[in-house]
Image (spheres, one colour):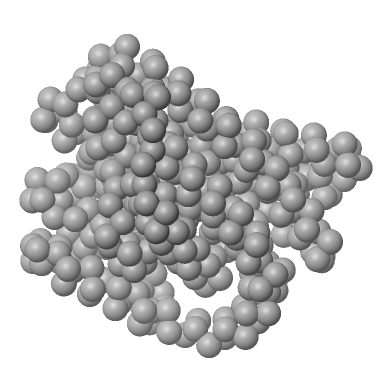
Length: 400
């Protein structure tokens, strides 16, 4: 039994590396395939091993998915806001430093989440019914606060509602699969790459041995902020890691790029680990991989949770070294490639992925999203307002 679970962890790490490094291929896709073939798999493997595989894959994914976001500008919903700061690091020759900061965030969040897990079990039972009905009001307050803090308030409002209207349309299109990929890739990824082309930017030689210098206070603030917002989004329906990032940014605005990258690394790891609290206490799944676990296993008890957290810790520990090693490889080889050709290739790759994953409609959504995503870069307003694509639909979900 122990050996089978260990093999499941290692296999999960391998698949997590693949999904983390491949834009558009999410753990949710693999989880759906596992559910589809669960009858076959359970004929050969124990149900706990299958669940451990899913958990290990999802945890590893939260470490590795920062690499394509930083080096290629190809984001997922969890890393969308990290594209611009990560891109700035890359253009200063500090791409690997950005990766190291997300590793600090992810692993720190993993340890902290496991430590507070027992405390959250009784807390969720009491607090969940009290805060669920106020989440819409909270998000409205956050949006207003975001806009008031922007120097160009009119443009902030315009960008927010343009992105929000886009989100309302795209997320409600019938039979439109993977809507987040073209929308977020356009708003944050392709738009960033197009601006890079317009300004004729080049990738300098990456400083692989550069030491990280960041204050302990900012690291702690980033981790605690990610823990708080990650917990909120893990517990409440309709909220994801991207929403957690927006909430965290309003709580701690003075972290700088260093603190922000730690925050981005922490959020999706927190969101996944603490989703298991929701599953155990409320029997509700808020995460695609956790949904898959709940469908594979009917009754989850405390013994199962201990195994899952242990598997997550092992997978996360391995992922630290894998992410660092792969980040170094990217840093060494990315400067050997012509930057303009690389940008054109990545944009073309995203377009092709959109076509295969979402069809011609997805390519159209990508084009519209990229057009909106370029506006903040030109106007010099905060790109956070583009998260209106998710915030506005969620707000309307809660208040209507």
